Image 1 (cartoon, rainbow, N blue to C red):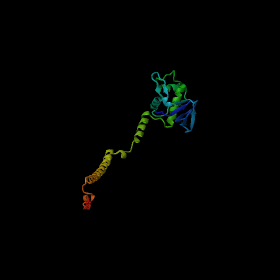
Image 2: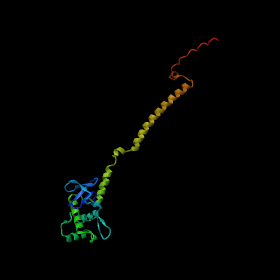
Image 3: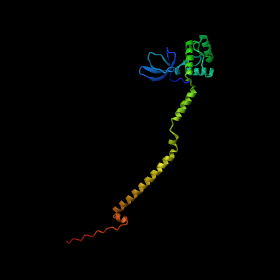
Image 4: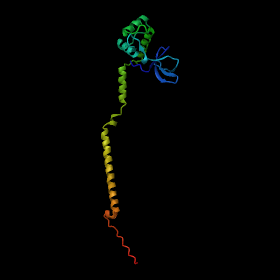
Length: 210
């Protein structure tokens, strides 16, 4: 089960959702009532996704234990945590046969069963695989719309063609201007001659007598 951001506070008979981290306190929300408050540094706050159950082998994360409870009850509620201790121990042994009887107390079993039923009643028991699939789908919807990235090369090519046409026109204009300038500098026909208009003749000055 995905138990991220779900908290237990010592002395409280319910579970809480992590909201924010304050300077000297944690802002939490009661899952059953929706009331928010600050849990000070003196409060014993435990994150459910960091809790493990002792076994004779490797410790089992609480989320995995809840998966086993879910499978045993076919997605239904588990037995009440208020039943006599022997019944609770027998039930838990049927779910996790190798749990460490010396280090897992009846009070621990009661908490696990109580927490499970709270989350079940709130519809918050979500398998880890389903949670990851939902996250992947949400990440997929965050991609850019297809219309914006459709055929990007074609768009670039279209812009480039237009740009090349403009550059060719500019180059042609610059070439013509350069031709006129070089002709004028070389003492060739004036602009009027180049445009087909006859050039005006300048009369020669008479020579001065010495």
